[in-house]
Image (spheres, rainbow, N blue to C red):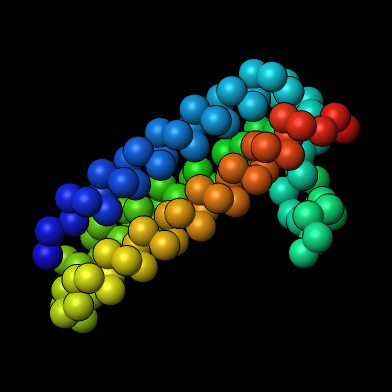
Length: 112
C-alpha cells in the first residue's frame, strides 16, 4: 500500500502544528497557564503549563503518524482496504490538528 499522500499530509500538519506551538510559546511565554480541555460550549475547564499544553497534541500526532505508517507492514488487514485506512489516518490527524488549533487560538486570544 502506498502511503505517500497521508504521510505528506501528516508532515505538513505536523510542521504547521510545530510552528503554531513555537509561535504561541513565544507570544505567551513558558510560565503561562493555557486551556487544554473545553466544555461543549467552548469554555475551558482544565489548564496546563504552556510547554505541556503546546507540545502534547503535536507529540500525539507524531505518534499517530508513526503508528499509521508502520501498521501496514505488520497487519495485513490494514492493507486490505487502503482507502479506508488512509481516510482514517487523515481523519485522526485532522482531528488532532483541529484540537491543537483550538488550544493555540484560545491561548492567543485570552489572557490568564
